[in-house]
Image (cartoon, rainbow, N blue to C red):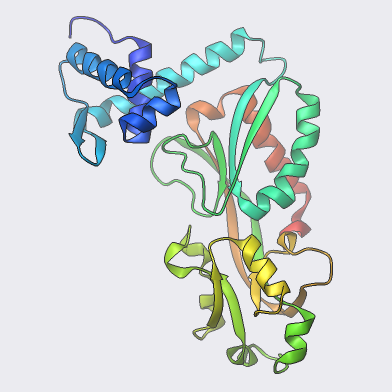
Length: 297
């Protein structure tokens, strides 16, 4: 290697590693895909090694590329921290934070919380990714995320945000038209609204398995918002956490003693966690979850 690689070349390396394609990296960097290819070729020439295996499907890191990745991420984190400190972020958070959250949790719980945070930090901007899946932190789809499956490899800050429970709900109309439910065994006679089973964002969402029998799924949806609407229209029983159920009487509890318990985890790449703007969002979620246990159980 004749010289040290430029940081800008390493930015191109990081975005291509995360996106997996030239077109994806070019969109992230707001440049032409030919520019990405040229900068990667230059970086490989400077380092004297191949960083990516090229194929029709895209770009995949080689062993040397994988070895470079954590060093490039560390440089990225240092650059972000330096820019934040020089911008006076030690006093007030500023910049953009991309927060990935489950769809209903994001709409019902997180979005209202952000009003006060943004009022207190006028230079802060939040990109709220309220998704039916979970944000991919490995490719930096989000700066931090709430999820059911915490990262087990890589450099992340991870904390248990809250334990929460899925309870059974149904519309009064559905209950009036179907056999009474007095015991868990009675549930086998009923229809259910659930997730599409081969499109589960996490195996933790297969909570109907805890019923003890194979449920009669009448309608399956990719997200909980659609499930709530379907159950409110009388299409079957559903399971949901209390915060997800509207307080309008369209859904009522069924067998309150039966529930499935899960945990939300909060995670962020270690280098991003150090940033003031990420830390204030992290602390907001932690403090709120700690102060509102009845929201989840």
